[in-house]
Image (cartoon, rainbow, N blue to C red):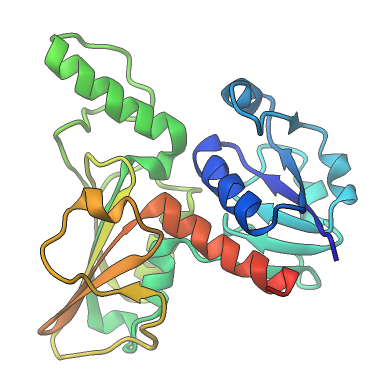
Length: 270
């Protein structure tokens, strides 16, 4: 069956990576891109720039991939009559057919084989959790440092280039923010860092006693010394086992897209 798939997003960073993967795995699949009008300018230079802002046309699709929460007309998404792959953590009616594609940090924290209250976590997030604006802000600030200029900030009111934000605010509404809130509400001890990398994230987990994971599927074990730039070329999440914990390192965009693709292949029977 040739499915028609709708992708809704408010930012193109993850969208472009997803479109590339979908075209390689499902070359015959028809894809419609939905989003706010502001997304149109960002997509104008790409082949995928045929943006649809009329959400009533979602009814033409069999599958909806939700990468971010809708900025308006949410009823068209909430009432979508088809299979939904939800990466944004949106609240759908109980009768909706929804497959949750967990963002990378959520997938890791759900895989701990002990209760959250027994674990301490340090999560270091890259600028890309704020989408294109976050990455562009990091790049612009970096250029400004070396050119002795002081341009206008887009996302980060305090400098992020060559810096670390401890316990960053402003994650509300983001998939990673919901993950951290849920983990904290479940009793987990979590510290958050926002650090000056574009896409690579790390999660350090510690407990008083040795603990294990529910599943080791989907993780790669590094063969030796490696760097963040090595990780950014892979859709896998690397894991380092420690005496009483684990360190996970991955590319946020690539691993997020991989989570979505796994659900899409499940729906499409591949």
